[in-house]
Amino acid sequence: MNKIIISVLLSLVFSLISLTSLASLEDKPLTITEINQTTIAWMEMGDPEGPPLLMIQGLGVSHKVWGDKFTEMLVAKGYRVIIFDNRDVGQSQRYDADGNPVILWNLLKNKLGFDVTTSYSLKDMAKDAVGILDHLNLKDAHILGASMGGMIAQTLVIEHPERARSLISIMSSSGAEHLPEPSTESSNKINDLADMSDAERFAELNGKGVYPQAIPRQYMAILDSGDRSPELKKIRTRTLVLHGKDDKLLSLEHGQHTAESIPGADFVAFDGMAHNIPDPVKPLLIERIDQLIQAIESTKL
Image (tube, rainbow, N blue to C red; front, side, top):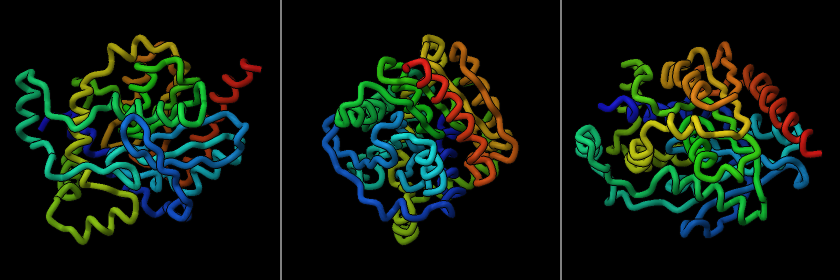
């Protein structure tokens, strides 16, 4: 199977690793807004006058997967934290499974140089994020994305550079073909997760913020995006790339290449971090995020 697709599929494992961090985020009400001809569910927390930080989650997961601890630590830093459900997951607009693309057929088309069948693109998902900024009358914000969310964040900055005060790409990838493939064990785990035959298990996962039903459509959006390296080289937005040294899904090289592709990007690799954000690493990661944002905000005074 195409290694870009496999690498992105595996980002969903991040959700499963992090489910234990879920808490009262699921109890906080979301606002539903028509954005980009799509209904998007979102919320904000923290200081309404603080620096705005728009956070974008990964493949097949809702805002719940951020977890309380991570978001509360950012709120404590004084930020206006904005989180939302990507289209096709959570309380945002869901798509009909009858329209799912046939993955193997589309992989063959992609290999032969033909366009794949998509329900939407990463550019559409980036427009959704920009639409939230428009709805909130925000000229710009700091843009943070994890895993597939990092790819959406990269796309947002590529397509709408004026809307980003900074780009923070966490455990993500440039999509370049030469990057290492994930382990066989990781591939087997994601294939099991994507098994559509167990409706009861899917209902349980949905309740925890994981939506495997969206996988085929979001696969295609990522595959359609391809290698973003040429566009990343044109970015002039201040960028921070964060990655785990123990990531077996999108290995360290994926983060390194993302940083190498973006002029002037800072790169930080963390011990004890795989394709997740474990509790001991959260303060270290947030410290780096805070350093970047404070440096940028200080120049605006």
